Every structure is written in C-alpha cells, then in structure tokens.
Image 1 (cartoon, helix red, strand yellow):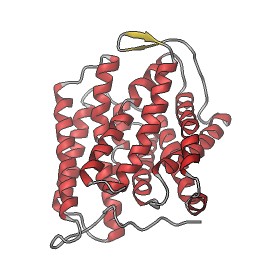
Image 2 (cartoon, rainbow, N blue to C red):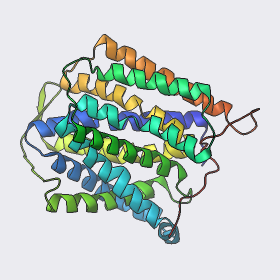
Image 3 (cartoon, rainbow, N blue to C red):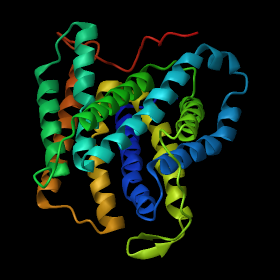
Image 4 (cartoon, rainbow, N blue to C red):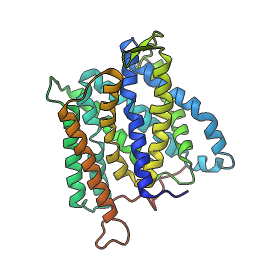
Length: 324
C-alpha cells in the first residue's frame, strides 16, 4: 500500500513520540535500582518476543526475502539497535543526559554530510538552514546552560551513538520493500537481543533487576507498568513506525523529524515525572519543528520533475543494500 508523503510525516511523528516516552519510564526503573543493561535487555528482549508471532505470520511464503536481506537485518540489529543504546548509556555514565543526547542527535547533521559526500552534490540552502535551525532548537530544548561537564571518552561514546543512529535511518530507508517493516524490526530485535545477552554475560553491560514499585505521575505502580510501556510503545511501536516512516520519507527527512523525539521526551518527563519544561525549552521545540519543515520543503523541491532539482535522498526508488 502506497502512502502519501503527509501520511509518512505523521507516522514519523508517532515514532518520535513513542521513542520519546522511553526516557521517563526507563528512569523510573533506574531509580529503583535497575542497571541500564537490565532495562535495555528487557526492553529489546521483550520486544523480540512480542514481534515473534507477527513476524512469522508476515513471513509466510517470503523466507527467500529474509535470506536475501539477512546481512541487512543483522547489521541493523547489532548496530542501529544494540550498539546505539550501549554507546548512549556509556556516554550517560560519564556525562550529563543532556550532553549525551545532544551528541547522539548530531546524527541528522552527520547524515546530511554523509549524503553530500556519497552523492557529491551539495545540499540546498534550505536544507542547510533547516539543519542549523534544528540543532539550535535542540540546544534550547536540552537547556545546557546549567552545570555540565565533558568527558573525552564520553564524547566519543556519544558520537558513536550518533553514527549508529545514522545507520538506523539509512538502513530503514533503503531496505528492500519486499521485506515488511515488522519483519525488519522483529529480526533486528532478535539480533540485538543476542548482542545484549552476550554483553550482559561478559559483564560489559551488567544486568541488575529490582522488582519493587515505581513512582509515575505522583502515583505508585508495579514495575511491570514501565516495562510494558518500554516494550510495547517505546520499542515495538517506535521501531516499526520508524522504519515505515523512513521508507515513505527517505532517511534525511525522517532523521530530522526524529529530532522531535527530544520535544516529546520533555513533554513526557513533565507529565510523568513532574519535570516542567522551561520557556526556553518550548522555544527550542518550535525551532526544531521549523527546521523539520525547512528540510521537508527542500525535499519536495528536490523531487523528480522539479526544475534544477538536486536529489540527495528520496525514498523511491532506492538502491537496495548489499545482500548475501
């Protein structure tokens, strides 16, 4: 089924909002004593189990497609899912969450640069303006004027997470269309679960679970509530819709729409944890939206048939990634 670009944009926003709620719910688990490895492991492993049956149903008669995209799914799961979270949590251990998140969300800028280098065509002025505007908005939303510290190793981990996020957008947009998004997400979760399991058993990302009640929106809930939200909303729904959106919009536009995740995360933290966003953060959210609109308008101007078009990254047609 072919969706209009506008529908792809709404799906991308749903994906960003789904990813955005992960922070507050994960924080509620970390506050009662869960380790980052435990939260990530249960989040990814639970999502893999939830997606197992739908994936098997979607694969009826399509097993040859899976074999043809096995390398793509493996790289996607190991890099875009498992390693991205591993690098991010290592950055958080050494720096503030704000700085770590800022470094990870340099991914859209890295993506524009990567597409520029590989296509040997400079982005249009509107894309450059949108990039700068979105990053400025991100700085305001994160409100880094407070007490922050930079750790060289932490910076490297944050940048590594950004590279992994670039891989997520590129592979989500260029995967073979014969491979359903739910299969791409489910297969990636299985691979990521295996990677996280190895990291946990080797104590690189140790597991520590605490099964006590958590505090959400001023009320007490079972630990199972944030786990369920992390698995069903922040992982299953987020990744499936994210892949679908990237296929409709292309990796460049999808990556900039994903910047709104920070805005959704601030809103979720306000509603769930009582962390009221400042006026400067709300202004930053508006700048992020403005940046996304600029990139989207530039993408439409770059569409086939537009005079003097320069196409850096359009969703259709796309060149499939190497297969095995």
